[in-house]
Each structure stands twice: as C-alpha cells, then as structure tokens.
Image (cartoon, rainbow, N blue to C red):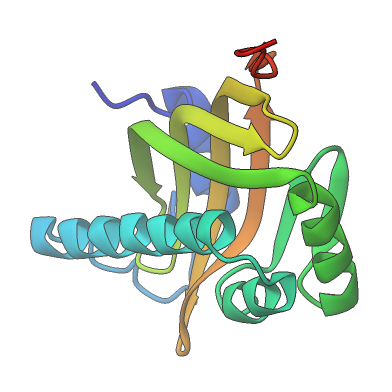
Amino acid sequence: MTAHLFSSSSLLLLLVALGTGGCSAGRAPAPQPLTEPERTAITDTLRQLYREASQTFDSELDCEVIVHRLSSVLASFVAQGRIIEAGSPEEGVRMCRMIKRDRLSAREDIQEQNVELLGRDAAVVVTRGVYTVRFRDGRTSVRAQVVTTVWSRSPDGWRNVHLHESWQNPRVTATRPDTAGK
C-alpha cells in the first residue's frame, strides 16, 4: 500500500496555492495530467537515481570522488544534524570523511519506497529500510531509517534538491576479541 505524504485537504490547499485550482483571467491553461506510462517512467528514473546515489556513498572509499559524483544529482542533505550544501564541496568532503572514517562497510536494504509525483518536474520520494554499518573496531550497527528526498527536473535532468535522513535507535552488536588458544 502506498502511503500518501499529504492529506487530501492539505494537497488541495497546496494545489490552490500553486495556482492549479480555480480560474483566473490571463492564466495559462493547466498542464495535461501525467499518463500512466509517463508516471511509470518518472518513478523508475527516480528510484534508479536514488539507488545509484546510495550505492556510490556506501561503496566508494574516496570522499572526493563521492562528492564529485553526487554533486550533479544532490543539492543538499541533512545528516547527523548538519545541513550540507552541494555548493560547498570542501564541506561535503569533510562531512563524508567524518561519517566514513571508522567504517569498514555500509549497506542500505530498501524495504519500501514511495514516489509522490507533484507533476512532470517535481517529486517527493520516501524510502524506508534498514541501514547496516560494519565498523573497524568490530561493531555492527543495524538501524531502521526513513530517507525523504525532494526532486526537481530541469533541462539538465533530475536533481535531488534535498535529502533528509531519520533514524531509529541502532541495534549495535560487538564482536568479542578472539580468545581461542589463551
């Protein structure tokens, strides 16, 4: 079942505020609604872009490479209580290094992903899943996450204009040092 991000009344207010409700002299005609093939193509594209960005961050070791690859699709993100703007690659690299310094690996397992299309050029994607991090000291952190991304399409393609991560408390397990033979 797809969870909707807006109540019907708030969506109606949003549409009216954006000028798609009611009549007004001098307004351009309302755009045609998306066809089902258009909806499917946009949804598939956004899901693929999300997966590629997530895999880049989790698998790439060099933070400068990560920031360079993601800067074309990610404008800003909120992580660990900090807002990082793509306009500051140095800050992005610094934050990436801080996040990754103690990690051996990380993996996101997507359990549910809902795409709410706001038109041909805007969408909100809510992704729920489990994020597992293995640390250099032997600990493993497993926690549920919800990632909300806002997307905008321009002539250059889709761009994630904002990403926000929400986390539940992690379940952390520690491996015990090998005591065999002692």
